[in-house]
Amino acid sequence: MWKNLSNFNDVALLFLRVALGSFFIWIHGWPKLAGGLVKWKQLGGAMKHLGITFWPGFWGFMAAFAESIGMGLIILGLMFRPASLLVFITLAVATVMEYRTRGWGEASHACELAMVFLALVFIGPGKYSVDRG
Image (cartoon, rainbow, N blue to C red; front, side, top):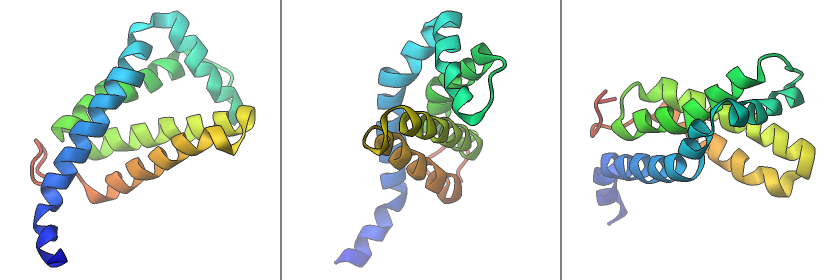
C-alpha cells in the first residue's frame, strides 16, 4: 500500500512549493519588500550577528527579495534551486539572529524551515514545474 504513494512524489512537491511559497509571500515576503528602504535597513541589521555591518539596506532587500520574488520562483519551479538556496541562506541568518537575541525557542522555527529549503535544493522542484527538475 505505501509503495503506491511514491507515485505522488511530484504532486507532493507541487503542493509543498505552492503551500509554503504562498504563505511565505503573504506573511513574510511581501510586507518586507513593500516596506522599502527603512524596512530593508532594519531587516539587514540582522547581518551584524555574522559580523557584517555594511550595507544593511542591501542585505535587507536581498532577504525581502528571497522571501517574495524567490518564493514566487519556487512556486513556479523556475530557477528553483538557486531560489531555494537564497531562501535557505536568509533563514540561516534569521536562525543565527533569533538564537543570539532570544534563544533556541525562537530560533527553532527559522532553523526548521532552513533545513526544509536546503533539502529542496537537492531534491529539486519535481516534474510539475517550469524547470521540470
